Image 1 (spheres, rainbow, N blue to C red):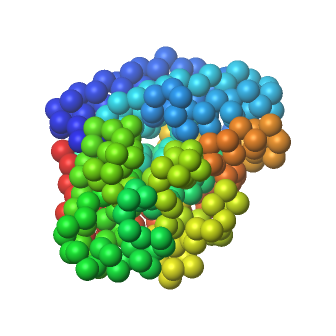
Image 2 (cartoon, rainbow, N blue to C red):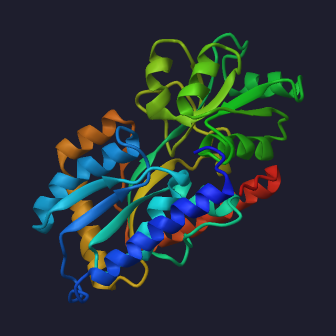
Image 3 (cartoon, rainbow, N blue to C red):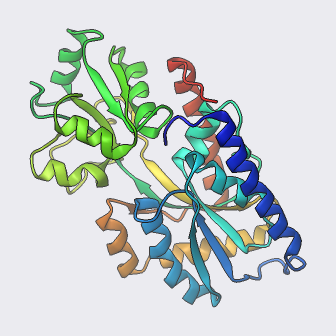
Length: 331
């Protein structure tokens, strides 16, 4: 999620919103509360990533449980805003749903001056699908073995070390600034043109620090190309048993993982939202689905609609605090 020129952001998202309104206008009258239509599941990022894999892992079993077709459609671009604008503009009949993420419903509202959707009021939260633990990694050439040594090393060299991110206003950027705010560290942010470029810089040792999701960094950690110092999860991860959580380090505000969830347009019938949530929760009990998610380092959730709504509000406020601290504002 890189810095996006304001004109392109608004044009792209405005077009998506218009398409969504047109689809809604052509739709049939709203179905009775609780009934489920064939649905489109819109993904805000390109095919092949963890968000897309999560949606496709759900689609087949969800279709079987609901008894209707479930089609996954990728809508990459504009930091996920184009996709979310289309979801928000759709008819609230359950025919169009979206995969919300910490980026679309936490970071974007906090850092962009203008968005073509309202993350708090423009959607019906249905359920959190999965959580994605995060990890602080460093290049092995950095002379630190654990988090305490890392803090000591950085504080002894204020402003000399840097951390990479996939771009301004990305989750990696926000996690880096969150750690700075909670530990009084002084590190420089070096944004890259996407996650692949950021990881390449860290693997080469040109930028020694990176904030990532465990799933993305795990192969490099297992091969010894990176070293993990802390994870954002409620307990130690079986794949990284020697790595403490931020909570163990008394950095509780840093201990929240990333997540993906299911949202519909605002004003969906509560009975319909609850039925969709219950269907997703049931699918998340399927061992085949759980195995596919685990391969991506993802942990099944299935929260209630009201719980997910409260979580989104919490994330937006938290990211706004980070953006104020780091003075992150994007057009």
